[in-house]
Amino acid sequence: MPREHTPRVIGNRVLLTLWLAAAIGVALLPFATLSPNRLVSGQPVMLWQALPGWQLGGLGLIAAGLLLAALARPLPPRAADWLGLALTLPLLGLALFALGDYAQRALAEASPAARVSQGGAFWLLLLAAALIAVDALQRLRLGLLSRALFALLALGLIGACLASDLLAPLSLMREFANQRDIFVAQGLRHLSLVGGALLPALALGLPLGLVATRSRRWRDGLFSVLNVFQTLPSIAVFGLLIAPLAALAHAVPWLGELGVSGIGVAPAIIALVLYSLLPVVRNTYAGLAGVPATTLEAARGMGMTSRQILWRVELPLALPVILSGLRIVTVQAIGLTVVAALIGAGGFGAFIFQGLGQYAIDLVLLGAIPTIVLAVIADFLLQLLVAASRPPGTR
Image (cartoon, rainbow, N blue to C red; front, side):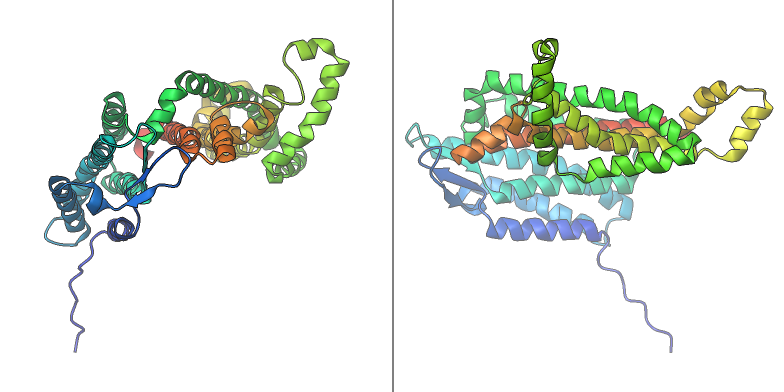
């Protein structure tokens, strides 16, 4: 007898997994913490203790909608994906509003030193919203403009919450208010360190990738050397650069006047460039080596010179792979720049290590959150750039 076909119940396993993880996290983790001051550990506040009835009801409706989108029926697959994507913005907005609203109510009659901080359930809700949106965007296969528009809507929602007084009572926002000028300065320093590393890495890596494409002998030795740099721990590289750069600045006084020393910006940029070279060189080589031989033969048959073939044929076809390498390097440099604060280079890492030294978690978050946001934004923008560089039929 033929086996009876069992109707499929789950339509989106990824969404259902994220839904279950968020539900378990909300049940077990605190939504916020209330502490008497900046340094004392806070009292955990669960979600149902922090939110009034209407907010719990709204969260329940969003959860029911997401569960419906994860099932195989009654919605068609594409409609379920649209529903999941549409519900991520209300989930994000409600989580932010609920946290700010609880902070205002909890601190209304508390002492001025009392603090309200984010709990694990709050971060889990934000992470679930982000991952659900990413999964839905991939399933819907929306174009560049649609994906960029959704990202702008999400950033606009977060920006509106930050610009208003809704989140002002939070301990993290109070820490930001106290460190506003320093935060801006360290943010600019972080960006300058990343930019100061990427430009030399591209200036060196692109020609080296071309050399690796043209010469096998140079390719093997070059990749061997760059692999060694990639395997060294970042803190060790920063430490190894202190003594030679300090000696160089002492031996050549005008370098010291330019700011070259054993600590600070110079060793940070040198280390970041060393770490950035391998992805740039490897992706440049992979992109150029991936150009079909028939395309090159056709270009030669049209009478193009080697230089014309490089600029008009090879580089345009290799550009998506090269930009993918730039994407990897940019995200990597944003993260590694945090460690550079240990040698006095500054950046968002200064807040992280200062907060660790003072056991002030909000000060740590003041450096960690913008670093993560900066990496995510850079990754998203470069993804769009990579997609735009591909031929129309392959996007």
